[in-house]
Length: 336
Picture 1 (cartoon, helix red, strand yellow):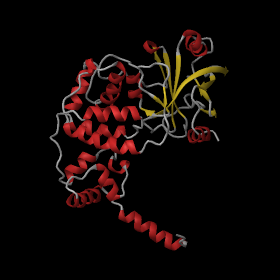
Picture 2 (cartoon, one colour):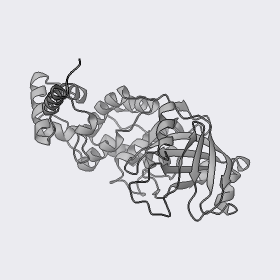
Picture 3 (cartoon, helix red, strand yellow):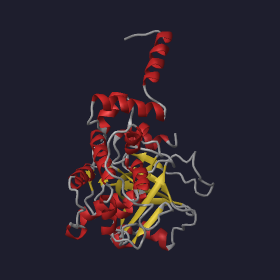
Picture 4 (cartoon, one colour):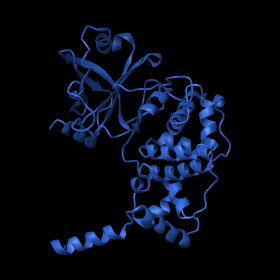
């Protein structure tokens, strides 16, 4: 259709007004959908309301809270219901086929799975989930089985997550590649992961929770790998002049990355980067566009191809798997 400017404004305003934007309006919309469809699901509600997942998960409330407010029947609450429900909003980035399939399979059982009976790769996949969901509840004293038992003790959280996975499965928009090194690490190249999930995938720590990761680099000694997580657009967020490193894509296959401001080329860290192939260590790159993005794109393994200067070192990394066209455009545009 070809509409003049005034007609376009009227149509767009009508569309905006038809979508429930306030919490009260969303609750009322769910009541209407539930009346017509007693077995209403998250997918059905999104289809009927015109809303998207970030509209339902606003950082404070989610699908279960919406159902409660609209008097849609839900499962009984667990002891830690509130923090686990809130944590579900941190899982909207999941776009990894293996993760989605594994979680959907495990969630079909009402009994908590036995961690000790799982192969290492699956055990890490489960820990990626439980460490993320239980990050406000789990401590270093809790075992990985405690983390699983915690999630399975909250039937409504599991029911909501199962419905959320259906939506996430339909939204996967990138082809992912296998990680040919580190076969027990369940990460897919060009999928997205949080810091918690990355550490859990690399088997960092023994318990349900993972150690803190506050800096951009993490020396994963046990995995013989350096994990480099960086933010491309540093125009926002709490970046000081000494941490505003210039990280960007030089080409689809090469990344320009700057080390921490104290790193000399002949320091232990600098030599570790330069000689990682000889030492049998892997360099794993993770990038996000903005500081408020929780999840990082996994760019996969990379190889040192040279550096300029020091404090910081400006290193060129060559990716094993080139960036897709859209990722390259986005990553290169941050310095345009």
